[in-house]
Length: 133
Length: 156
Image (tube, rainbow over all chains, first blue to last red; front, side, top):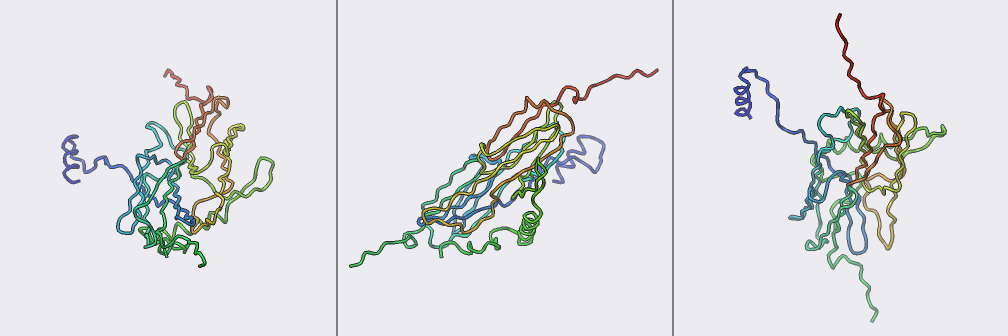
C-alpha cells in the first residue's frame, strides 16, 4: 500500500500525501435464506439477485456449507445516482451441517436470482415404512 | 437432528457478526411494521415487502433497477403516470406439499409496490424493461425537452 502511494506521488510529481485509491468498495451481505424440509431432503433457498451461475460457489467442507457469490456492478460509468439502495457487491453465508446429511449428494440450481441448494438426508433420517411381520 | 440450530428462526449462527445479524433482524422488524401506503384510488394497501432499488440518470435516460429475486416476471406491473413510476407485483409463496414444511423463512413473500417521482418527463411509449438474474431493469428515455441543452451565452 505504502509503496503504491509513494509511486503514485512520484508519478504525479507533486508529492501530495493524497492519492486516489484504486481499490473497489466491497459490501458483502449474507443472503436471506429459507429452509424447507421434505421427506428426503433439506432445500435451502437463498436470495442472491444479480449473481450469475459463473459468479457463485457452493462448497461443503467439514460439515460447513458455504455459499459465496459476487455481483457485477449495475452502474455504468458516467451516470448520476438518484436512489442507491442496492449495495451488495458480494454474498457470503455459511451453514453448519449435521450428521444426518448425505455429504456426497448436494445439488445446486440458480433461477431468477435465487440459489437453491438441495441437501439430501442420509439414509437413517429418511422416513421408512416398516412392514409388519 | 440433521441440521444444527436451523429450527431457531432468530438465531443466525453462521453470520460472521452477531451485532450485524441482530441489527438486520431489528431492521426487518421495523420494516414489516411500517409497511404499506396509499394506492391510485386513495385506498390504503398493505405491502408486505419493499424491494431495494437503484435509480441512475444518464444523459438520455433514467435507469431503474429493482432487486426482485424469485419473482415471476408475469407478476410484475410497471405503470408510468405523469412522471410517477410505479412498480408493483407479488412474489408467490411456494406451496408446501408432499410433507414438506418450512423450517426457516427469511425471504419476503407477498405483494410489493414502489413509486418513484422522476426528475423530468420521459417518453412513456419507449419505456423498456428486462428481468434477469432476479433484477428488474427499467429504461426510461428522457423526453426531448428534458434533455439538457447547451446554450452559449455571449458576453457583451
